[in-house]
Length: 607
Image 1: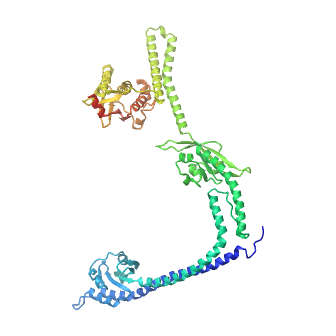
Image 2: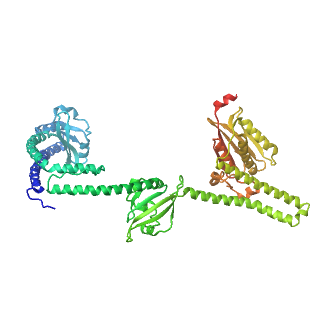
């Protein structure tokens, strides 16, 4: 590269610029001087008034503690008025004297004489009566100028007995500063005018190639790498222009390659159903895709640079070094009472060919539903196996007995066959209930609603149970006197009510009462069936509608049933657009309640 001559060097150009900068610096110094001068003038003004304050305080204090019991003694306000009259000056607008009860007892301003005897509410006075010296500069709307307020305590034997309130016209100081500022502004304008003329000439020499490079840099920032910078000379800026054009070419090639890779990566990360998190070699997050942010319920901007162990809540169990060595997947349980969430995290270490660790890739899989389904499957298989094993075991025992000769016994044979038949029917009911639930799960069932007077419909079902009941249980009905028409599938709702009443009869004691109620609400009817049985513990009340759930398995098995009745009832009531729930007090009985949609306007068509 050819050496730049001295006269073509940009150094000489910068020398001229520095000369102009010195001139501007002089102006800056002048501004600094004006600021300091203003502070000094204000300080001198304040010190001049503060220097006269001790004498005034002494005179006022003497008058305030003076004995005025003599007949010829003047009132305190008159003596203070004379002292303030002597203290008046051109730079002091007003002086007030306030006693320790915040009452104004004197003022040097005749127009404010009406304030004497009134209580002062000024915050500066309140602070001064506590022993502090206060001052503040205000803008006075009446005089349209700035005033300085000074409050000083009047002390006697270390105790504050009053305060001096001085209002000084400090606007004269600022007027002097305005004159000084005008002088400096005039000088600055002249200097800037000369600087502007020289700057225009020099700027054209220096800024033209720089402006070209700036425009090219702007175009590069927008992705345009096709333009070239014009070379105006062979000085340092010219050499910079050559290098800039070469850099543009290299950047164009690199940008095309990088953009292609970036689009591939963003496309992959955006459409991944799994969460992806990348860290640096220190374990701090440098990348997280949208799916991972959704899984962890965090903002992508806030987790960048956060330690991965903190983000995944693994601080207590793992360090970053241990995660690098972890070969197996980690199961992360982020479940809350409101939301169930289980993630599986797979770790992959980012390493160079030399073995140097650059970071860690964590892939998060949402396995919540899988874990839930696995748990439900295990519970289902366990419950069904348990429910089928009992009747099958019983049947095998009785069939073996029949095989061994009980069939020939006229008294044992028929009884054993009868028991075997009952257990077979029990298994058939279980399988039918399971098939029905399976159809409901697949939404493979239909309801056929018709308009029915629910009072008549409910009475019919209760009458049937009342005629066939084998135990001494009383029925009590609390129904509306008028008809209540609702749109229901009679067959399916009959099955629901049959299950509920059957349960109530099983658990009701001899001589107990089952109460049936219908309440008409605004947009629904509420149906309840209450027994006086053993009740359900409070902690189990929410589980009675789960499949195969039984509070007392031994008693339920003794009384019969599959444990699916209320689960089926819940699905059928839901299909009708209603809700079903239970209330119970242990030892006092249980109430099963459900609601059905009810439209009084539709009922008018049936009346």
